[in-house]
Image (cartoon, rainbow, N blue to C red; front, side, top):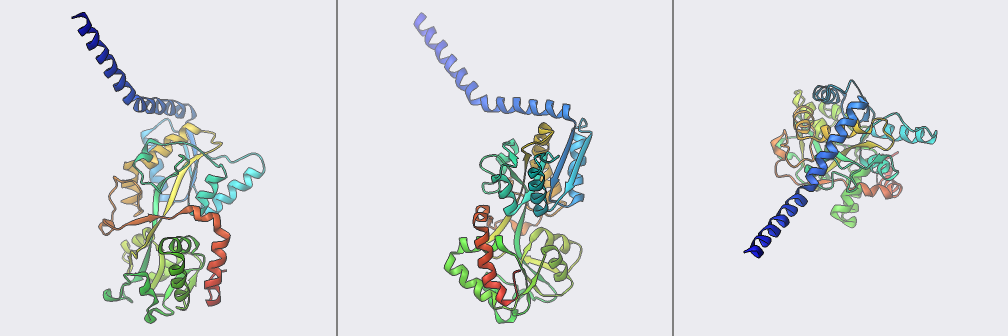
Length: 350
């Protein structure tokens, strides 16, 4: 009988140990969260440099300060990705670094800063809900929204039956001189070649370049010109911008041509953040389902890489979206050179 009781006690001890072991990551995470919260309370302020329209960044900051009233001062500065990268590098060269806590930017610039060591590793628990490809495997950054690339068109100039359904549809002679194209569309160019295959991709690009494209210098301005009827088609546009302008009553819409790419807009903690705990708290808040769904998706029309967020436009349901492969930036000079060789003879590139 005594042996039986010893066996029972041993089994119970093992069971308790296994339960505690299984719960350990959650307990550790809770402990880390408590430490971050306590640290942020002491710091009480925060500076962010990030892309994203000011009205929506302000919404996030207002909610953040309401949830955490001890955050008395939060400065959210909007800086385009290229200028953000340039400023960080310039200030790093002085040896003083930058007075910023959180960085948010997109595309090749995001990868560049991550690889140059400008981000401090921080694995936000909220990043677990974000799809692979839209976050750094080492915990340096995670997407707080995504810009999906679409083909946009003016609904007064393009009949429903003529809306392109495939990339090859843009090669139709009827679209000659009628398609706008960004003069430095390097990221889309490189990813297109990778996905469809280099030989097939280059064949498409060369034929596309012969369509007498209307080259322009910025996506935002191009969408406005599209809405004004300057041209009927825009080959590569950011879906969120098209959706916002369309919602205002402009005669434009979009079509998703396979392959569909999405540009991650990532956020992370600056390596020398003066307020590292407040920075982590803000990143957690920015990546949360509440902020993703209610502000970046519902209010700003952005896409979200969170699996539990519903697109505002139901047409996105079921569409396969591929994250841009940012590592293609390693061959940036070669990509730019090849792009120029194809498009510059026809008036594109710089």
